[in-house]
Image 1 (cartoon, rainbow, N blue to C red):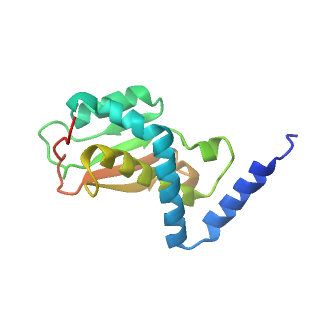
Image 2: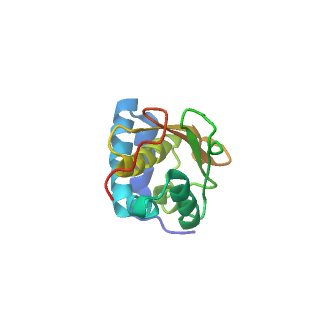
Length: 160
């Protein structure tokens, strides 16, 4: 049996907080976690995937290549579906879940916020909405998020 260390106990406390805190407190916590997580790794991957003015579809193809468990679906070219598309993860990619055993489904809010922050680093603040539809920690077989842009279509590329 593995000896428990301070982090095991600490993250058990995180689970307890997530399970019992108000929605507002959990939202503040998960936003802070999402910002830190994105800054540590994923935001840079997203920015590289969109580099050189790649289209949304080409960048999502690149993200599929870069993240082993990442996939997406969107309407075929020329078909209107309010500019929305799905992002799916075959398994939970959160290090807090995988390395430390945080199990509260409320932590999954972080995934949606993280995806929103990463896409807004490309398209600008307030341009993206993300809704978490399925979650591994909620008992679903995968994580599934629906992404839409504020005006219903892919916004123009900024900068680069």
